Length: 397
Image (cartoon, rainbow, N blue to C red):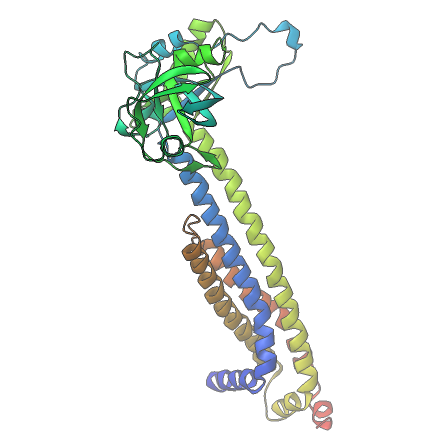
């Protein structure tokens, strides 16, 4: 048979049995659509979480008290951890490539303004917060350089809205944890980070927060370093300085690169898992092709016998059925891609906070898998068709 005749015959066979062909390719279409849609959602979650973590910038290093490690000795033999102090903060400012340093203490306390009260997160920090955390005051100013022990406060956008309801807040007197403070600034809206409302906060000088929450040391020290510098080299210099000051490594240093690397690995696994779940539907679609093609061989025995009688060889019969199975798989793959990509676009339009993105590597894998499954599912029926005796097949007419 001429290749053009083979193509015409295959297309004719597919369109002659439209209902059956539609059911067959639907299985593959659902599988491909599931892969495309689920991986697009996974990529969307990936981008959303990374955006949440990088909204404070990307050149950050965090230092926390206590060494995160596993030791082969009794905990009683290890001396108590020396707290991180404001003196450590001052010393870290002199580390090469470090542009800003802020010590942080946080806790929960009631904030009162007039007759209104709201329990919220209180951050004790320093004047470097706007530079390090990429947060700017919308009104007034942030904590001043010379305000170490002053009772001044900067309100988050939501806290300002809840307590003052549109009334002027700058210069107003409020109480935080029962202590009087004067409002000197209101922050720009920042939104939420993984469920934590960054606007429902109040900032006070770190010295005041140490006393308010009865703490001996800082909960964390955040550093902003030069973007052109190597984060690992800066982290090593920070480590050496703190070891000299503390006498041992009783702290944990985490660069934002390390956090993003771990987070990216977790999210990559998540995307792969949801893609694998979609691939299960592809296997089901392949079983559907196998079933339909097996039935087709049984129903078309006389047709196959006639083709053999007219001179078609076993190889040509084999090629006809394989081509038909592949065509169904390709059509199903194309339909599935259209459904999956359309669904991802619709989800992105309905939920702007979830920036869905079609993962083209998974799309190509899904389409390739659809073709391979179509071929694999068509092999057995095609071999059975090619092995039919033409006389016996014609006898069934």
